[in-house]
Every structure is written in structure tokens, then in C-alpha cells.
Image (tube, rainbow, N blue to C red; front, side, top):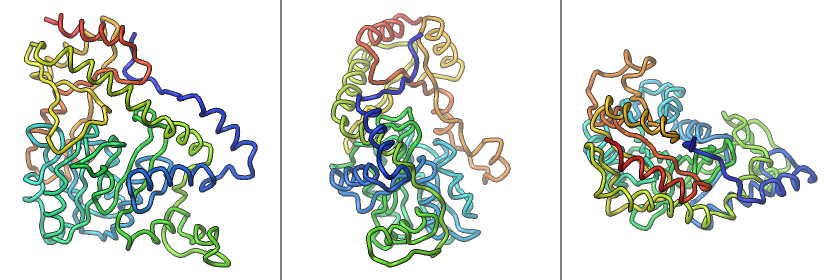
Length: 372
């Protein structure tokens, strides 16, 4: 069986972890944490980066930093992972789910605009498959209504919008380094703070509500409890693993590019059965996180996935709509979100991981092209 995903080790992970084991610091915010922060801040120009134990934790920090109150509303795409919404629900906000666009699973400014009212405080955008939402239009809309924009960039490491890195456009952003992502440390994430006004508070929340980070920099002679927070920072073991991956970012991205383009070259223009392939907006780059296909119906997708599984290829689909989920159905305002439902029923993801071989790619594409 060709698996859907296989975690990749670049070669130095164990060496760096061993280095941590022989150091004086295994808890968070040590040497490797600072190396990872510096990598993202220098390469992408992010204002402030803070590693977290997961992308979910990074989103929860985003929600806390938004200063929400009960009754405030947050606009979130329905076609996303549950963390995109639950982080804001925990702060007492009401989530209004937005539909996806016609061309890809991302939300559009036209989906967002009708949902804005006097209670709206935040817009959450999810860059599905690492492909950018139209951020200029969304930021302009947010500025018109004095709203905070949070980029859920969980899938979007090393991807760009009109030359600007995703995660660096909104006021706040969250990345994931889960084992399924391009760059991984098993479980991990990162908060990005692009609004200078939120940097100090973010550091305090990150360190359990204390000003411990300032203490370690010698800015205060003792530290204490200053605000709400939690133990969001990962250990140095996670940061060491992540640093080994970041050192090999170009190699990892290059291999994923080869796999994505191999799929696309073999399939585009040659595939039948009503199956369509992803489209890329002119303003967006591709970070080769996902290669997906759209089947004509749920029944067709089920048959297609079963065919591939029976022939030794594991595929998967993605999100179930959050607006009609068991937890949120009775809280949703009743609007139909047809594009979200369409992607939920028809999208299928092909295997894409560093060690996928050309021979395996040829097997997968041949099976797809021979499917009747």
C-alpha cells in the first residue's frame, strides 16, 4: 500500500535532539527555539514569532489576543479544521461560518461581506492547500470595518500572495508543524504577531501569563503573573527537530514541487470521469502542500477512492462542513453553504510526501488514467 502520508526526517533531527539532551536546557525558549524564531523573522519578515506546541495552540493565542467578549462575532470558513473555529468559541465569541469560493475551497471577500455587522470583531482566513486567499480585498474590507484579520496559515509555510509571505499580511497568524505538513516536528505550531501593539501581550500569554521572557532578556529583575496565558511554548526537543527540518526547507520544497508537478503533468488534460484538477489564482504561489482532485459527486468520490485503495493507493478527503456538524448544527444561523458542501463531498487528496518515488507516482497516475 502506498500510504497517503509518511513523516520525513532530514537527517539531523536525532543529532540536534541529542545536543539538547546534553545541554542545560530542555524546556522551551532555549537555543533551538530562538533559531527557529530567527529563521522565520529573517526569511519572511514576520514581526514576532513564537513557537507553540500545536497549530491549535497558536490559534488559541490568536483568539486570546483579539480581546473578544461574549456576544462578539467572528467570521470563519466552514470548510476548515475544527481548530479554526473552536479557538474563538472558547473566548465566548459566536462564529458565523462563511462559504467557500467557486474556484477553490478558500473564502472570498464576497462570502465575508454579507456576514459583517456591528458585533463582528474578527475575520479568520484559511489558506487551503497553501494557496492564498485574496488578501488585498480582505484586508481592505477589514480596514473599512476596523476588524482584526487572523491568517490560519497551517498549510501555508513558504507560500506567497503577490510576493508577500502568507502569515505576514494579517494582524495575527498561526502555522502548523504537524506530521502531515511540509515542515514538521510531529506536533507543533507557531504564532506570528504582525501588529506591534500585540507583541508584548503575546509574549506574556506564551509564558503562562508571566513576563518571564522579559526577565530572561534582562529587562526586569524578577518576573510575575501579569495576564492570562498558558504553557503554549514547546520543549527544546521539538524545536531541535523543527530546526533540522528548516535547515532543509529548500530541499523539502523542491521534492514536493517535483511530485506535485509530476501529478499535474500526467493528469491535466488527460483525466475523464468528470474529475477536475486544482486551479491556482494569478496572485498566489504554490507551496505544494496538497494535490487534490474534485469528483462529480460523493458517490463518484467514494467509488474512486475505493478503486485506488483496492489497487494499493491510500487517499483521503478533507473537511466535513463545520456549519452542519453535530456540535454546531443547532447554533448555525441556517444559511446554506453550497460550495463548502461541494468540496466536502467531492475533494480527494493524493499521496504527497518527500519519499514518494517516481515509480510510485507513475503507478498512481496510471491507475487514475485507467479508471472507468
